[in-house]
Length: 295
Image (tube, rainbow, N blue to C red):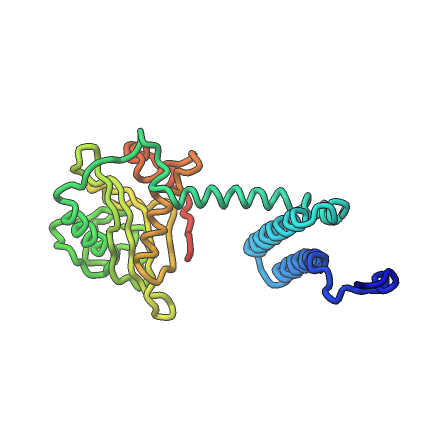
């Protein structure tokens, strides 16, 4: 047993792990703040145009989220120690708006991704697959080819001559105006999904994936949503959201379905493609100004 004098002079050979952890936690918060500021300055100096502002906002958002989580962790781990720290409370207060908004958005995004569709049950497209589904897919794929390629792939008599700007054109000449998809280094296409009218006869909308090559001669897949009108001289009306730059058709299809069957209708301002309110209307709010969603 130690004497009172020895006890007073005794020093614990093992430092207070909890105290050191708290000190290190505070240092980490300041490191995160410093790195966030440094990265933002880097974006200001090196980026150009709208990309600089977007990258700065993304950096600040991520930094705020990390600072918010670390500050809460410190207070939870040792409230008595840090409740008196003005700096911790200031950092928590400053970071909380962006952090809480990010957490709410992440939760909403996860909910959307885990759902089958965000279309309300009463408006959900429920038509069974028609007997001609595979034939219709094959027909539309050939039709896209005939609208893109210099040489017709489909039989000319199937699609006849088309009128544009005062002239008639055959399918065996370059008619890039006929369909609003990337025709550069086009190779082939895949009809991913089709939607029919209430009678199950006429195709009115669908999802399309094209296979192309980029500047490095690498295969890329691009995804499109479209409205279809077989009697129009421009039968495919390409919709707003376009998926670009995917290295395989599966990942492109997954994001394409995510956007057109879940994401678009999740905020209530637009309708998903499997929403009968979208399928039954003629004028579409998804048509103006295309938005490219890159990989």
